[in-house]
Image (cartoon, rainbow, N blue to C red; front, side, top):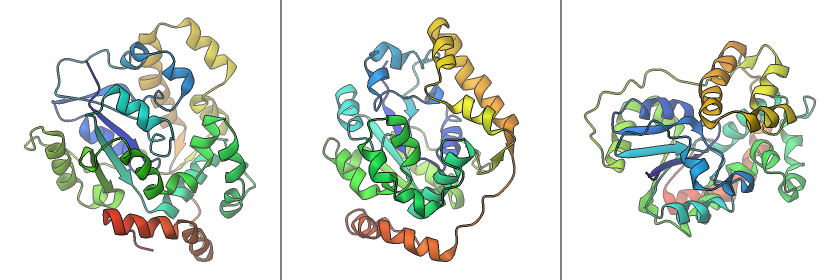
Length: 292
């Protein structure tokens, strides 16, 4: 068994919906946990390929073996590691207008207790250089709202290892507005039947708020001593079950439908300047554009 398809990004762009749509195809087997932290995390990568493959216990010879990690796109080390694992892997990238994506990730971090509740969106940009120079991977993944949205810059790193025809790159608005058509195109890219009926009417993991930040922070924490201890004594199958079923249900129960405060127009204009040059290159080289 070897994983032959991977979603590498981006966070807060609709990858959960994409995951549920892809899982409906009988020729696709997705990892039991949607996102496996492996290729960009030294600690897990050193556990070896058997650890990675332990998240695929129910594989039954499906044509497509898929997984995701939405933090892979900006990772400096992941492209080389993924290439070493499978140089023929198919890579899916789902992009969102970078200011909207950054603001959504910012609010998500606040909701989960990762970000200072008093800091403003634009002020958070001032901390990014310090975070980038910090070796803590978790902070880089969760708190670099702006840096992680430099799509052209990060894709260029992946293109050093993989040809462009290894990628299926599209935008979240295409998934929302023409989901059925885009999924059919994706099936064609993967080389499987396009005639499978897929329900794309539901949007998953919509932005909202939480009843308890304490519960949310514990569920999503990636390095708490108690979770490390419990993880060290549980069998792999039990850990996969807890991550894929129990934590997922707890997150749903802890969620409330409450929209984030909209980003002010003047803040949007300022934030957009950060992405200006990267967006120009994205348009010139990959013909990908986003409306202001």
